Amino acid sequence: MSVQKDVFLVLGGDSFVGGHVVQRLKARGDNVSIFDLVDRQYAVPFYQGDICSKDEVLSAIRKSGATCVIHTISPLSIYHQDELHVFEQVIVQGTKNAIDAALTAGVQKLVYHSSSSVVFDGSDIVDGDETLPYAKNFRSIYSKTRMLAEKAVLGANGQGGLHTAVIRPVATFGVGDRESIPGSYNSWKTGRTHVQLGSENKLFDRTYVSNIALGLVLAADHLPAPSVAGEVFFITNGASGRLPFWDFARAIWREMDAAFPGRTPPAKKRVVIPRWAALVIAHVSLWMAWLRGTQATLTPYTVSLVTAQLTFSDAKARRVLGYEPEVEVEEGLEMTMKWFKNEVDAGRFE
Image (cartoon, rainbow, N blue to C red; front, side, top):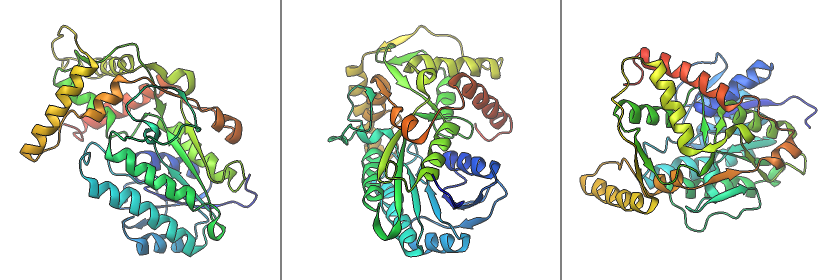
């Protein structure tokens, strides 16, 4: 456990997960600054810059006096799912820039926000832990570049006095979510909630965002302990987050029925599309999108994800970091929908 208080710089501090990290650090009285493209909130020192520029990252580290960098920057996968160069530049090269800047500035700690998808090859994962190897056949560019960035972070551990750790969140949702919740909202308002891909019995872990932020901060606090340095940790919501994929989706849609009375589309008979058929449709969708020069609305990766059983163990994080989820899924969903309703009512989502 750290004795001297760290000075924190959160890369992507105005993003979904990064914002919750900043709020947590600020609430406990830490010295925290943000590095991001846009300054939206939080009333802490802000350094504008692009992670694709090592010089801009280095400048922010030096100006902030950071001793610990928490890296949460990533492009939204729904907007760049087929754009290899975006993921390579932001996730892979951007992470290498963060590492190089940290080494140049003499930073002591770097914690990286990765993804559980680095071990997902489309097959079921039941109680997966940190002994799982990286996937051999990645179903998405996002997952592969996350793996490459993660390897760079772990490979930097012990270099030049820098100690690193990696947090792998599992299916994050929560206040500030501009990817999965808006996606569910779009399905709801267009009357597509009756379509189910695959079995409705496959368990799927969900994790509330502030629990992910807690995991990142705990990893930072415990560095440079040998049990943490150079290690990866899955973070989940435990038992409260483990439920069938479609049960959670329908819970969100029920919340939307209640939040937006009078707007609920007419009910339709449920249509269940088997996994194999959904994969065929997704491949055709991807091919048609390529011909039109547009983004596919359904991809093989998405189908693989929502039709697989994906559960992970956070026993290592509990044992080593003392992690315990603070927000249960039911409470998290309630807070998320309250925030999202305000966003919709304010015209920030169509």
